[in-house]
Length: 159
Image (cartoon, rainbow, N blue to C red; front, top):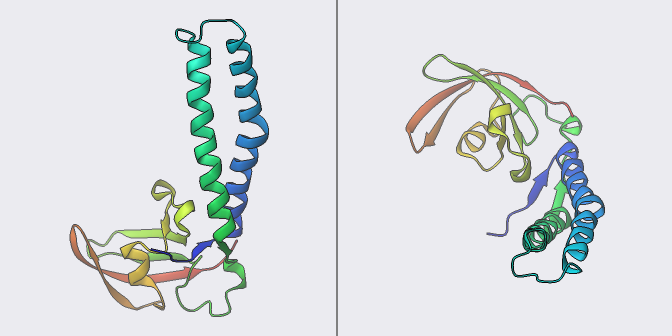
């Protein structure tokens, strides 16, 4: 599927920082280790060489992935949302589910999701159900665990 890669400014910066760290710091260090290990002779049983080559492949794979994601990124600044009364990308939403649990989440890009810290992807079932809802609205969300009714309690936009 070729959907937009929406991302917050903070998420974009995080991906850029990871790319810069891998490309400018970690990769050159591993290249030096592999070069040193290769100069020691027999490479077939040389742990530094074998691990280094494997780590280089992992770094290169991640670098390619990050470059593609950053290239296709569409930065959306939540603080610039003109309609702050409804739920859109970047919103921090507090809702109550049918079990009377109050939950606060932020709707972010696919590359920034962190469910342990309340950051969910804009394409997740909960985020999709909440889109365009206003405070006081009841929305129905369908998840693998079944249907749940959510009541929107608060909507905030920030950076």
